[in-house]
Length: 452
Ligand code: ATP
Ligand code: MG
Image (cartoon, rainbow, N blue to C red; front, side, top):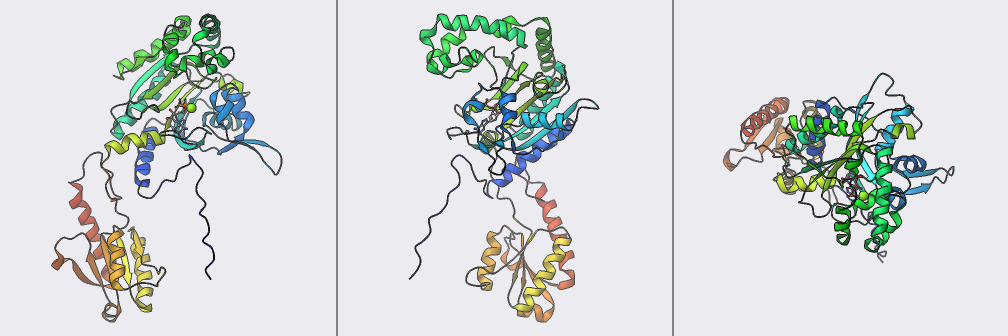
């Protein structure tokens, strides 16, 4: 009697697999971002995915969406420590910078990439494990670095072929300016408390600035007419904001000022910005950032100005999918087909020699039902995406020659050669280099290049 079939265990809701078909797009995206970041002198930093819960509670502020309801926190059962899967990376990067005294010799331009975790309701563009790539410029005080970060994003959209992303900027001033605005804002909202929804009422005395961020249509008119933080800026904040705008204008970066733009975290001050597209429904913000001068001190460091951004990788990839024609990226150069023990050994030897020469080689291996006939092996070779099949059977072993079949040659009468084992590497390298040169003229901009 067969055992009862076991139930499958599925992945966690809101946490996605990136399957091999999709992986080349991720790779193209990540490589493009890295090369843009490097071209501005940003250095990579990698911090742990798990941090002490206190880091986020203190850094992000306890009345933020993230800390209030989105964090995956747990107790380390070994020692009772309170830990959290990082919901964002700025806090961890700043912690690491302080812990290792990275700004000792001066300001630092840093970038990071990796998964973030937020317990949100999964929907299009909103997941529980998602990915961000971000930059943090730590120790820089002027509007110049704010503009540089924004220009870096613009260059990235250009390089990725994404044209429908618009920039909104705002200044949320400094703490004292925000306090004066906050008092007036509370008075204003109290006067109109009949229009406030439950969430806004809850926020009224903890984080009224966030009410401006509401997506509730019934409150739009109210927040539109609310006192504007921009009107409360002092001379220094105003000069900083003017400086950012001057540099953006001089570099032909188009933007709109959105006086209602505030960011989710408490640590922001002065410049804030978001890149938004209309092509992703309500999850249209693909990148957000701003200045966070107070954060280093909040973490116990010396006063150190800083500014950064984080982009949502899944949202940008969804935009790219609409633009990038999917090409079947070649999986390998050569597929090794073999039959018999001696041929198998020779296939292993030739496979290693081809890899030594830099080629990508897939060796046919047995599956359920055994190694398979020549015919079924050739089917695998065809579907592998390989350019060439290298075939070894009794005849080939007897003659000391491999049969090499060009799998992408339309002319079926002229696609096969017999090559002595010692010449196989040179022959295949010549062919593949020749093919690449031939194909090169036909590559279109924006097309995902195969690895040749
Ligand atoms: P939203 O208002 O959409 O919740 P946010 O203000 O929480 O965004 P940030 O903390 O600024 O987002 O994160 C920067 C970027 O990371 C966002 O602009 C977005 O592109 C992406 N992002 C944030 N949360 C998620 C998520 N749950 N799933 C996928 N991407 C996300
Ligand atoms: Mg959010």
